[in-house]
Every structure is written in structure tokens, then in C-alpha cells.
Image (cartoon, rainbow, N blue to C red; front, side):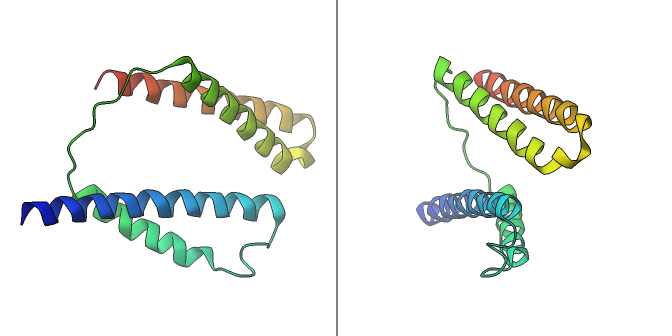
Length: 125
């Protein structure tokens, strides 16, 4: 019986992570390219599935996995994603003029700092 519970917990967690990443990628494509995704798929339905799976994932307990120590590649990855986030935010706010530079730089710094803090906090586990 316990093996079935572990399999179910892993399945729910994997489904949640898969649907969340898929939803975020589709939402990003939708924001960049316009109505390219919503023409074929209503993202609200997918969001509903992500929320339900997220609730189920929170209520199922999973044993914490010991993580390896962070490498320098992790910090390069965080910096790369921060730069990409800065560029995307600038593209979406460029009609604000000079204010878009400030907003995108601050957002990029926040992305980097929050990612760095999460990465460093996971080392303590």
C-alpha cells in the first residue's frame, strides 16, 4: 500500500512540475508573439489544472531530496536567466521611454538576487 502512495505522490509532483513549466512557457510565448497560443488553446483551462495539481502537491508530503553543492554553472545559469528576464521586461515596457530601462534593470536585479537567495538557501537543507 505504501508503494502505491509513493508512486502517486511522485506522479502528482511530476505532473504539477510539468504542467507548471508548460504553462509558463506557453504564457511567455503568448506575451511575446501575441495571440499565437490563445488562438489554439485557452490558457485559463491549463491554469486551472496547474492550480489543482499544485494544491494536491502541497498536501502530499514528499521526503526532501539531498541536493549536491552548487557549482559555478548554477550561478552562470541564474545570470543568463536574469539577463533574459531583463530583456523580456524591457520589450514589454519599451513604450514607457526611459522609465523602461529603470524598470527592466531593477527587475533583472531582483530576478538574480531572489534566485541567488533560493539557491543558497537550498544548500543549507
